[in-house]
Image (cartoon, rainbow, N blue to C red; front, side):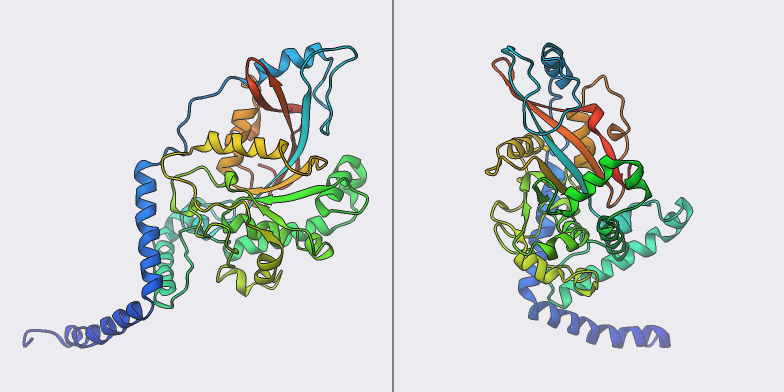
Length: 383
């Protein structure tokens, strides 16, 4: 004690009361602390034992569909749930659904660990350590303040992500423009996305992760406000394909989704209200298992869901999801001989991509799915 400098003495005397306050706050918020400990343990177990990106490459869907489409005289450019079979043909029926992939806005995890397109590599490298320290300190603050929230687990939209969602909402709200006049099919697509009275029926679905749900709720806020009985259906098979903690859902099974601390500060939409009244979690069965699932199983389950929906009259499904999931989907269900940018690059934050998914059932292969390569179209953002 006698050899300590004045600075060391000050640190020594002040450290004890600070530690006492921190310990008291942790004890006072013990449920939150235990909750975060469980998340931490689950995250470690998932890093060590998950098989989310490991699966046997399935048969090339092009080898299954090409002979059938040739026999039926089907060019693959049709849409809807009808068959492309020719007159008198006994070939199996090819069903079709149009999907609209909507990637979430930037998340807090992206803000910390990904460069993104909004900053240079130099800026990202210089700011990485300070950004990581900020994220860790904020995670500590969330624990000490008793908030069942997280910067890392089930990472929510960042402030930049919210602005991207706002821009998507403004884009969808536009009724006309030069691009729509030049491309009538774009006007039809936007009419479907907006849920216009004259448009074919469509359904909003989302991954169980908060950033995807927030993107759907905020990006389609105008549609949801005009259709107060419409709900975003949470589909667990859309959960992101990765072992990272940000891909683990913190929403309990069948429970209402809770808006993050960032969502709650937003003025673009009342996320608390939207989550409480227009998000359906009846199919949400909790977090993805550690050892009994992988990306291919969930993608197949999602395809089964699309074509097995109770309301089979809905041929247009608007899907809120994630970059690796979408890229894996294109790699799996596009013919392997097709070289497409969707197999190589991620959809940009809040990008919207339209595609036609086809299904056929044969004795040799059972249910098979393929994306019509000619149907892939950038609606907003791109790759």
